[in-house]
Length: 352
Image 1 (tube, rainbow, N blue to C red):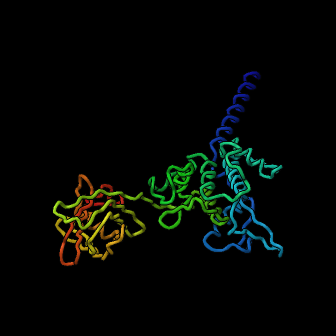
Image 2 (image 1 turned 30 degrees about the horizontal axis):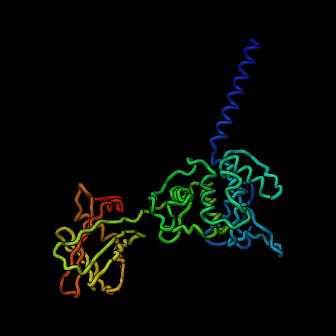
Image 3 (image 1 turned 120 degrees about the vertical axis):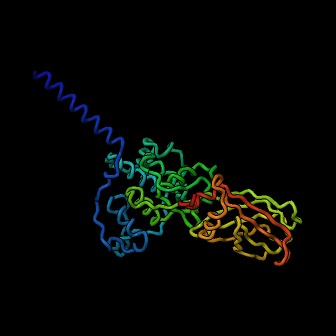
């Protein structure tokens, strides 16, 4: 009986160890716990939109500050981050998430222990991934490193961000999918029009915001970014050749829709839009100089939704837009149509 009890105890211990190992391997955001106390005057140079994020990363011990010659605690929000500092931050996040307390004893160079940890845990592909770890990290490098810091399930997709929607991220670049992962998770939000500025440096205030959103998923941002629509068009067979169009692109920003026309040549000076279904909507009449090679119309999304609802084909869900071009506002020399197949995605509710 004593032998059986010992065997059961050993099995229970083994099961407990396996369960603990599995839990550690899986990781959890609940492992991020307060190690510092943050007060409104913890840093003399922190104020504005990023202050709550600084509070988060300081309280959790992920980012620290410095002390000025006057004895004030400073966060230095406008300073940039080096690659070594980025790797250090990534290691702190990873080890805490997976409940693997590390002392990270500094050696020579000081960041070598972090490089070793990052390589061991797949944050870096190798110690030679970057040639100079003391140089300033670009936003692209920062995103690449942070995207690999935690497993995919820790970056739950909460946003629709179509491939090609971030205007300054080249999909042929190695960092592209990392940026999209962080946008879709609501960790990165981008600038005007969703731009990312991959080659720019990243400030400590921005780093605090990104890290704060990573470790506290409730603070992640919700938004939608659609890729530009490269739309088809047809020219009326009776046109007199006053306008020759080589491309049409549609993008949106907030409550405004932008339609850019690329001209190969055009003699007309007036473009008017549009005739939809049985209802005539003249949204805009514009005057274009003969020498221009592209022009952008801006339309309210609310008006376009009204036009779309009245003119679309329920089976094809297209928006048909008709343009008139003329040398003077009283005559029509050219007429052309565009058909936008994916227009429906811009509206969450549509009449059937």
